[in-house]
Length: 337
Image (cartoon, rainbow, N blue to C red; front, side):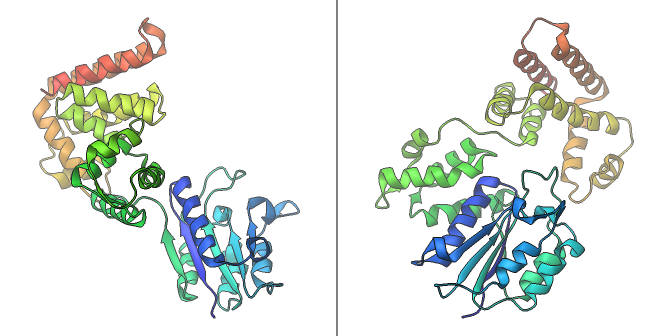
């Protein structure tokens, strides 16, 4: 039996840890976990005063004892961000030990300030060894999220109506890492014999999760005060953002409008170039349309409102910070009507 090599990565810590736990459990099967599994974290890589990947390679090269196979889990590998630091592991992957199943986890350890992107040298070496590179986070884009949700629902053994799926997606928002636990609760409560409606799902979702910043700015641009306030509250309470962070989101959006106003940009490509937007030009197109809708006077007024809100959040008013933002968001949305 050849070695299994898998590299797990993803932006959500909860989903990544769940994926690691499930993959290790699958590799252990009916075996004795205590004897089979060796798990290394960032602290194990500290050799003297330097971090080295050699302890992980040594563990992977160690034959099993009293069991037919070993499962070696390399956690918190984000410390090794270049080919030089990964060298011993890359060398091992050219000829992995047949009796070792290796699970590599690209994540940040507690002593690492900031994690670099997954090195191509590592993912390429895993692929060359016949292994898997698995993204454990929620995919980007609505289509990716929908497919991921459908997979999670199927794995949980549930059947949900379209309305129930929409409710889950809307209420969880950016907190999609809660989905597996919500589905597990639903499976425990209802089993797999019935198709669940939105009313069946609603009591189990809990507090509405956060939303991405563009949902707030889109609601403002649409001139919908109730929707904009609802998005604001979810960013503050569901996402744990503070008032200054939300103000920065609103300011950055309207600063784009200010740059476009009177710039002469006539299409999305010109607008994207002016704003320094790389990749898709859709955000630039949305900003250009909003500038044309508002006109120069309203764009200028939006900047004035943002400046006053900044002063108010710093103590220029007796209003509470959440109320300052509520007034600001309502006024900005009113400008777009």
